[in-house]
Image (cartoon, rainbow, N blue to C red; front, side):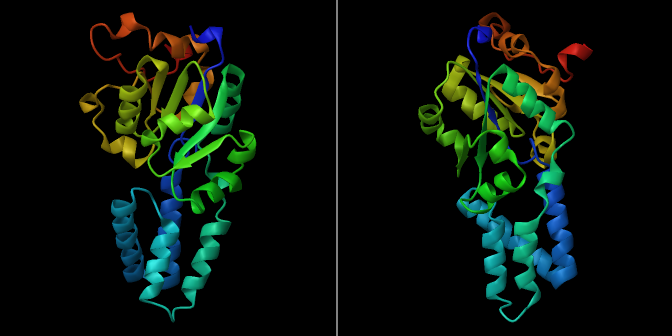
Amino acid sequence: MLSAQRPLFLLDVDNTLLDNDRFAADLGAQLDRSVGAGQRERYWALYAGLKRTLGYADYLGALQQLRLDNDDEPALLQLSAFLFDYPFAERFYPQARQTLRHLETLGTPVIFSDGDIVFQPHKIRRCGLWQAVAGRVLVYVHKQQRLAAMQQRFPAGHYVMVDDKALLLAAVKRELGTRVTTVFVRQGHYAAAVQTASVDPAPDLSVDHIGQLCHFALADFAAARQPSARANGPVPLITSSPEST
């Protein structure tokens, strides 16, 4: 049972704890004001190309590429300041901080994120998450491919992975099996785009927003992974907090 030991909570950042879609919209608006709609569209095209090539969001790399065609554009110099000075601490989802504190009473929270090696750690530090989890931070290019390294850094009898990407959660479930409880947070554009019925294995739990986890107890995470619950197929998704059902 999970109650016999403290589980380790693997928490995603973008669109799980922080509203990264809001950041992207603000960046787009800033590009529009600084260099115009044409260059804004060019930036996002470069960003999409880098993401396909690298496998992660590279906001700084896209800005570097945009500069190659606009080396005489002084406004581009200000965009780096916009990125590094962005108020990520104001982009927590409602009750995200409370959820983090609540999960710390149940187990050990670890930030487990995808991203580049410069901007993503900067974001995690700037919003206060790095300090909140006492430096327990992992950032990989493809975190679902680095589960062995994660377990070596943070060994635990059981893991609870909280993420807005259902397909990524399925990949982790296939690798770790009953050693992980997967929690799908339906926030952001990735969550909106996926058809959960087509995800195999389905998430163990699903919530509409991160704040609902404030009401979960260890027993709620444990119940979702009982073998009897999966004997006849995927566990039905929970779309409301336990105390409200």
